[in-house]
Length: 277
Image 1 (cartoon, one colour):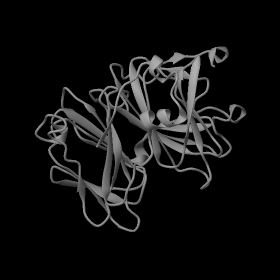
Image 2 (image 1 turned 90 degrees about the horizontal axis):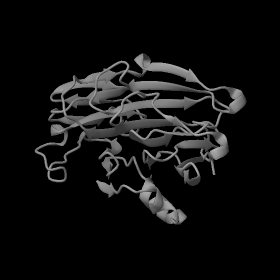
Image 3 (image 1 turned 90 degrees about the vertical axis):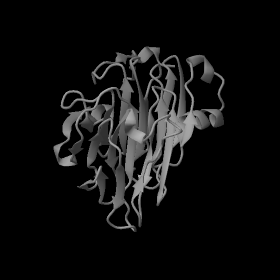
Image 4 (image 1 turned 180 degrees about the vertical axis):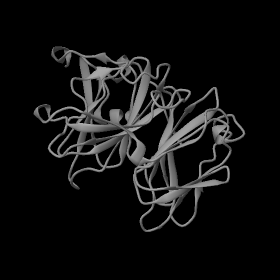
């Protein structure tokens, strides 16, 4: 697990491209047979990839978090964007197919991830946040995800938002998580831009339309924006004071995860277009 620190808007005013990428971009998320995690000081979120092949994998963090086991004081969510697999939670096994998700509550002692086929491994994108209360574990099949079509072709942002871990349909301490799919011919994931000061967010960009597709993620204050180019299966940390919008050279998908003191999905501060710089 690597650590990324929190920043004020003033911190990044003079960042070079390399500085910006080092501080906000996670270039490698999935590595076969391995677990790659990042701990961000922004609301103390942990996120990353679990990619089991021939053997099950389990996240084991204790001394790093000052606990006896990983989820002693945390909750966890994941969405699988790879092949079929399974998760075994405190001895209870569930099959997981592509785009299925799961919420796992505080106090769960063992979470083991496995793939059905090592040649086509599952790719579990996991997100964990601090928790103060135990809520029930819940499998979140893609077929049951709360579906919200949004945008239009005129603005190149026609997309479907699939809400998995969302306060409107289940209880969590602070974690929210979902999956957004852009329609062919659309490229913007959010515009007009907005911020939400009461929670931060991470984005995993994935499932690009072509091998050469690239996504440009915009961050920073509205009047002092920065940008990062992303390849498939890379993620960015977005502080709560920052805009977070992106545009791709073709369509793509992304997994968003939020945490903070407010779980209201629509709690955001819109940025007028003429204020963007």
